[in-house]
Amino acid sequence: MRKPLIAGNWKMNNTLFQARELINSLRRELIDFEDADILICPPFTALSDANDLLIESNIKLGAQNLYWQEKGAFTGEVSPLMLKDIGCSYVIIGHSERRNIFSETNQDVNRKTKAALSAELTPIICVGEVLDEREAGKTIEVVKKQLEESLADLDEEQILKSVIAYEPVWAIGTGKTATPQQAQEVHKFIRTWLKDKYCIDVSQQIRILYGGSVKPSNIKDLMSEDDVDGGLVGGASLDSASFVEIVKNSV
Ligand code: 13P
Image (cartoon, rainbow, N blue to C red; front, side, top):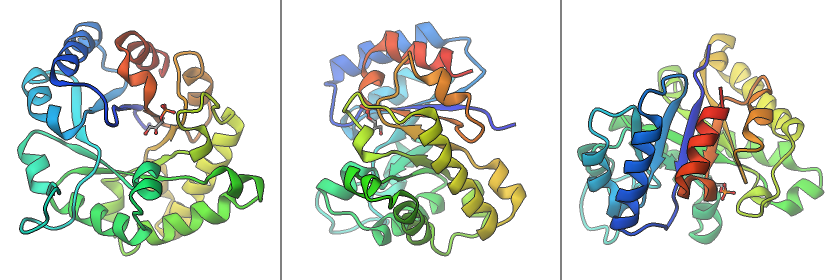
């Protein structure tokens, strides 16, 4: 019922030349693949070229961040309209690296989510606990607060146009993946929270992605869990063969 979504978050990687090579390879390998939605999120500098290379392709384009204002004196920032204009249909919001390195708050994430939706971009809203919080048994409490504040005031129509990503911070870039059971426990909590805030129909339609050391070898097991609807892939999305295998193993 929920079509899987496999998203590659390239983070701050790839020059234009490297980006073009990777995209051309992904296009070739995934040309007929229809069973999952496929998304890549290159850095801002590669979005324009990526859009040109992805014309009439089944691979969608997303950005890794935006600013919530429409335009103006915000040196260094990029607006929702600019992303739409350059061909993006998705944007990652509130990634743990934005939260932890650049001090983004849940309130920032909320503003950015609303701005993305106003520009008809699909936000991928990230939540997840750090290791200390998991070890202190606070995972659900932390994720609940992130959901409550990051999704504050979103109506049914808005949440239905959003994607949520659970990324335990201790699993990002560490090679240490959450077990499928650990992922499922939090995904199930997120879906139940959505059911309580909205309704069962809404909660059943929203895709919840898992992120954190997703690899070709673990995507199948993660996807076999009821509430895991796809992956937000970092490191392994930089290698064409790995990303292609993750996409193919996701269904
Ligand atoms: P890795 O797949 O490199 O652990 O990164 C996950 C991530 O942060 C995706 O947004």
